[in-house]
Image (cartoon, rainbow, N blue to C red; front, top):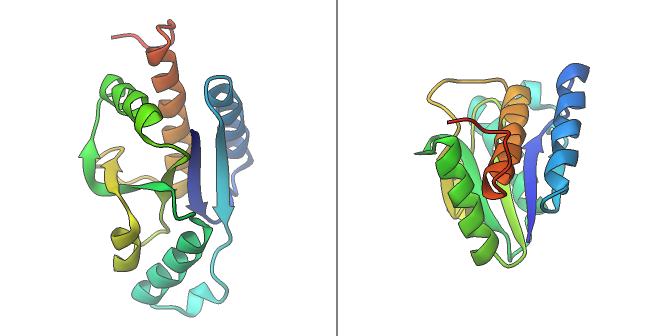
Length: 157
């Protein structure tokens, strides 16, 4: 199985980009993992909120494969502690045959079509973060999950 973090738009902040890349490398020690970034839709500044959600979701959906297990990172999703998330990941490694794809939407979230494609939703927090922060927080939590699964001393309870 491979884990994919799929997102819209590049990471502009070089500090975030460096940290995200460092954690992707750490995760790859345990399981294949990659970041896939789709470009922002063209002329998005002229779009309404709804049009932007649709355009972004269409770009994300085009990137998906039919065999993907798709999990939206969504504020209305199920929340986990770090230990629960580790158990979740461990179960998925046994159940998902090819790609486990975690999707970060644009600033307005997802279109209904994206919700229809998804298998489930999880939430990192009830708080709102920038998309760049979500990338970093998620990939750090994925690394933390891998160390929990492997009984390594990174996580403290």
